[in-house]
Amino acid sequence: MKKERRHFSPKEKVAVLRRHFLENVPISNLCDEYGIHPTIFYRWQKEFFEKGEAAFERNSDTHTKALDKKIARLEEKITYKDGVIAEIMQDYVQLKKNLGEI
Image (cartoon, rainbow, N blue to C red):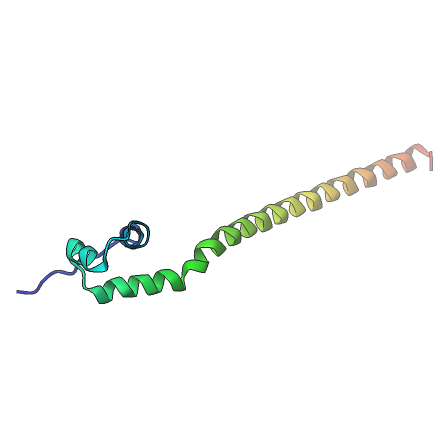
């Protein structure tokens, strides 16, 4: 009979790694407790450290993207308002010409 694979969520993987690093629980105990092979633990550890920079970069990238969107939206607003002001000025100049003040 084939054994079903267990799938661990990213939160569960980090919790296992955290227990090893912060609580100093031996890898063999964790592997027995969670029913995983030590090579899986070491793969999670490798992925965690290789992608560790991304945890810090994503926040700044998200913040940068949000600021870029806000800037683009504000620039569109300014462009629209400039257009409205130009139309009003054109109407004003035309009105002054019609009244003979220019």
